[in-house]
Length: 243
Length: 250
Image (cartoon, rainbow over all chains, first blue to last red; front, side):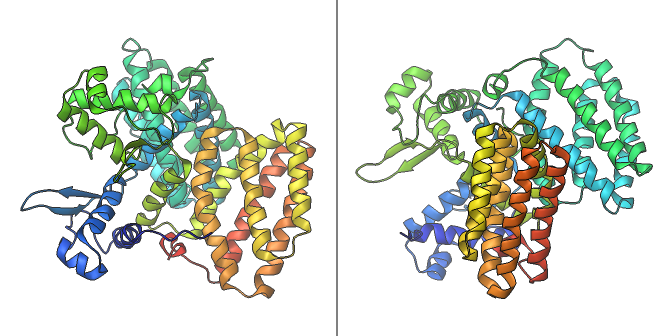
């Protein structure tokens, strides 16, 4: 049996397409309700139902009142990240599972950097790693830098899709990281941060030397050590850790 | 989890606390799919919040797709438990907006499923192996390309499932939703002489893959699986298939 999509879902799909293709850019206001009703040939309740769908997806926001209207938001992935976090918690996913997935994705990314056209991605990592030395003693600044470095590794692999999906994962890990820092005395992470900075430098060096296999092995070892430090032997579920 | 920065401005603390409490009930399964939320009065008493705060909390849950407001006689506020398809929809919107292409979609699939293949070769149980073997062998007997393609996509899902990492499974599912659409589009838009041999070749790779999983050759299984995914991408590209993900669903 084929189910026929409701008119509101079809209108939402049409408007979503205009938003993701950039025809309706972030910050723009959608055409007025009256003109959209005429364009799609639907009633006001049907149109508003379509707005509710897009509002739930956080790609428009409806401002009420005389100067109101539906404004386009940037599809920045925060909704995807929040929902995926909730989904993983609902599935009873352990924290260690999230860290293991991160390891696998980044090791794959390192392999892609080594196997691809390297000049440009390597320059991004080289530039970035130079900034770490000065902030290695500052836990909050280093946490931001570190997140940026991991993201740069994945982005350097050259797949927009992989970078976007890894971004979802990194938001969850970043949330845990912030809680981890807050729950330990100041200075607790400093030795691990110094070690991480050395690991970043070594990764860049191995990639410069065009030794992809060694780079992948090194990065796996580093990420597994990070998991050991952040998760330990804990089999805590994500829901316990993040709430 | 805590709220990512931006987007939501100045939500009062009380509403956030109420949202967290209700979200937690859904996550822990105390409120299940389709359950009607308790009445406003009950929730106000239980959570210790005012009516406007409660309504704001419910609006937030609605915006997170965890509560659906249905109108009509059997209406009311009902729970929608988190589903991977919904997550995939959110992810697809972001990918479309960032201008992701089918080529880089398949690269991501290789990067995510490759490690699943290696994990599977290391940890597979004998019953998992039996099911993989049965599925791969059954594929060899299917001649209708559309049907075979469906079976092959199911085989990929089985590999991901059996690898045992829930986080990778969720991310792979997001990619697979789009790959399913891209590969069916390829079969629908090319002639049988073109897609027939291509889809049949995929089935033979699946059988070889099961051999590697059986012998525990993790690295070889991963390499074959990545190559297989990238070969599919090349076929779609050569057939002049959709370039942008936004066109896959067009």
